[in-house]
Image (cartoon, rainbow, N blue to C red; front, side, top):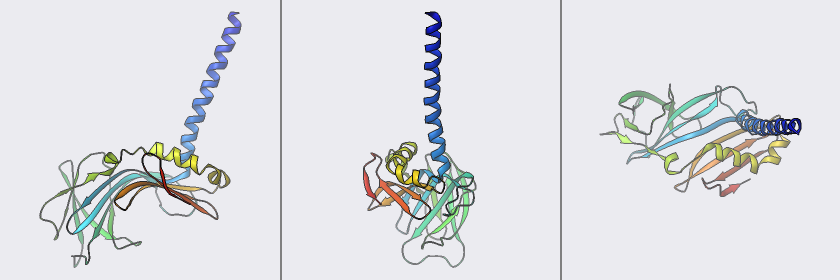
Length: 215
């Protein structure tokens, strides 16, 4: 009887191990299939511009090419001016992080009319302040959208892979995925993009996992 109980206990432990391994492996596989995962988003609006701060992990050489490469943490500051850009030369942003001032030179975004720069370091703080040279008279505080949005990127990632499971399974060797936050009509949504070999699928959904748009 004792020998029987020992065998049952070992078998039960083996099943638990397999289950935990499967869960862990699934999450690892999801991360490996993603070229970008955005987990923090800050927003600022003034009379002259809007600005965003985004943090996450993405490919070291970031491009939509169907190939997943090694990822690194990133931080990006983007500024969108209303109307004409009030600069003759360099666009200088002063970002205050925990009483430290970072002077950033912004460059033109090749995809739209905004200006942006990569931060040399990722900062895990709740408060960021911005001052734009030749535009501002005081520092402005960013609003942490991910806090108001009550976002959970792991939850969003699991939901996305579940909803697009058949497409991802069909393109398992070529799939490249992206999870970011988007503002649509003053609302914030998770945006998950899955790029296959010949086709692309996406989902736009809120933090309660209600789908707003899907292809």
